[in-house]
Length: 391
Image 1 (cartoon, rainbow, N blue to C red):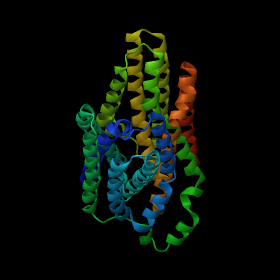
Image 2 (image 1 turned 90 degrees about the vertical axis):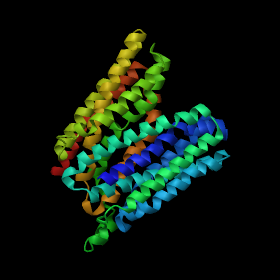
Image 3 (image 1 turned 60 degrees about the vertical axis):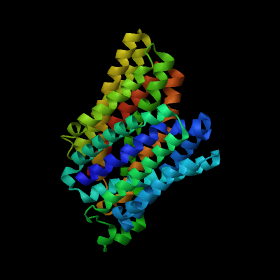
Image 4 (image 1 turned 180 degrees about the vertical axis):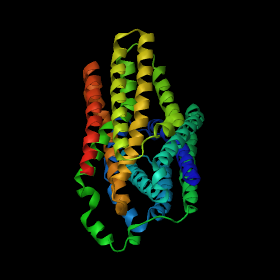
């Protein structure tokens, strides 16, 4: 567990560096327009949605650890490749490759965790790993401030190199992980039947739970797209509130994710956690909507209150989602099942900005009400969907 946590910290410090400077690097040093960057990232996101299941299947065949040892250096090369991008076509191609590697490795890491850690500690362990991940992102984002201040090609490339080093460092740590990965080849009598019938893609109940939880994952677009646009375009709150919202969210995840996972011990408790989290997300949306009607002080208070409630909802839906993705999966095909669940999340991240545009941007407070209803309905449907598994 300590080694997995250190791997997550190292990787996400690098990710924090890259995410913070990537758009500015592409616009100011490469010369791409914001519209072309958005188009390229959308194409890459679609490719990432399609990467989870094949990567998971491959992990079931060759082993999660063995596959990640190969993918880590490839991710490092992909990050370094941005330093040599000079055209839009090259950017799109590289972004697609990098996103396929990133989304595929996320599914494989999830399967690895499912296999190397005891089942009874899975939720708490994943909560701790998520706290460490957010701490790493905060550290990386802070470290990127120097490059942003310098605003030079050399400074940006140095950060790309540091991100690549983080992937290599995580790979070295992974290589020292005990070799307890349970692949399908260790289930010799069952491997053929599992492989032939593609269990996760034919498991309609698992696909339903994945889709419902993916709706809850739209909360990320609310934070990253909805709040910035809403704050600037429709409220009297100062733009600095957007940064405060991100700080509140990161700190709550770092401090309270482990605590939020307590009591989530099986499928019924996980489904109830998702329901409570979904209702909190809905309340957060209504608080955001209320910010339109007040003064600068009132709008700021409403947005920060919404961010607090929203973040608590995120903690619960994340904890519930981990248990649902694991306990409802066939343990002989953890890779494929985790690939399906991760693909659902990736799809939500791809369509999230469009959902925000169609609701909040186009319809204001009414759009927030629609989002609140969407979260509440998805959360309410999850307990019923999981009960279908029991029957």
